[in-house]
Length: 249
Length: 317
Image 1 (spheres, chains in turn green, purple):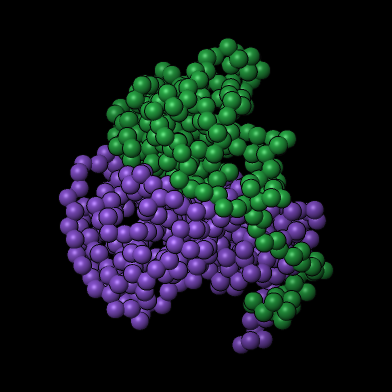
Image 2 (cartoon, each protein chain N blue to C red):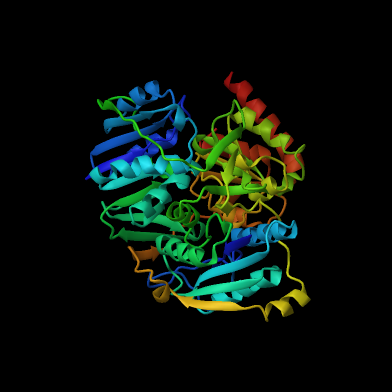
């Protein structure tokens, strides 16, 4: 079985994001970029499934600028086998992303697709669900545990109320939660090896997918800032303030 | 403008997220139909018909739809989507699971987690964990939208005079089977709608110590929250998580105990009216957004807080 894992290059989660002065977007120049955190969990899960002898090949797919190859290399250094980059601008909407992924699925025919549950840049949380609907494959979103059996898998999903377990038939798509596993670090020898692993470069055009945006960004603005409050000396003062100043208790 | 809303419920009760979503949709138009899908939901359908702004409840009451399997729900919405200009659902794990499927089948982009509605086609949504707000205009003929429940008021549960219309739907085969659910049972207020939330972080150091948070929450009749670090460390389960990938809360009072204030956590609570931070580390970023900060060892501060609250309660009595 092949596993297809999608990865997105995003501003590193530790970076304090700044809105551009002209409200056209956020500052991306000279900002550290990394793999979207839950995508790392997706890569890790694929590696564990392969190590358990349930998969033979892990393909990493990314969509975006040339530099997304770095993100693909990161996944290859973790242990994935080969990469595919679909070259595009870095703001392809989930609707188009899911269509592009479906095209790759047609030719690669994976038995499982793993994705992060949400990208931490646009926070859309759509791509896995859309891809599942396009392919008519079962979906298991927000997965915190995946047990693959013969032709089915049992997936534990993190939902607002707690946990839910579903049984899905293979092939299926899972969107991975941060608690699915602890992603490994790439070892130096593996980083060297990854440099030789192949990355196939494609374009949306050659795949015949229209990626024209449907949503117009009118403006990107700063959220209202909170005024810094006061420090209190002790618990007694805190309770007094909450009771008589803020009047919330 | 004709609007369809997918209601969230558990076959027994309507979730408050449905009331927030109706309120959000009412800013777009006044013709609002609610789709209720479930099993044994006659009472729920009747209840929703009385809500403010509701014109019609479309009820699909079928044992086959007892559990909210996204793959079963989206075809129902798509089958009636023709009549509507806007389709709304709450941006809860329920709505997030279903709506992108509807959007892609209608070949439209979904607008996720809307916090404000500017016009029928222009919406405001947070991006980058709320560190930026995007004002976006949809150029699709149909708008598929999920709304952040805590950003909108709830509508009144009466004053409406909607009608209930029953429909049937023949599902095609799906390959996803519901097995079971483990829901945290609690007598406390629900986290996403509570007036007061007391949250604990890694500073608590263990699941055992986390009970100190429960004690304070009991005294304030508050819901309990947690940072991702505390959930990852196994102190409490995932449904307590407040943050970018957890729940977003907007209580009157949010007390963050032993939480440093990572960007991901702030995304879930920084709209709270009053924020209190208790942390040993004076430099912790949480103090930058706190209305009241107390730099103290939480293992000393929490018992003190507990007894101060007792004093307060005894004065009131």
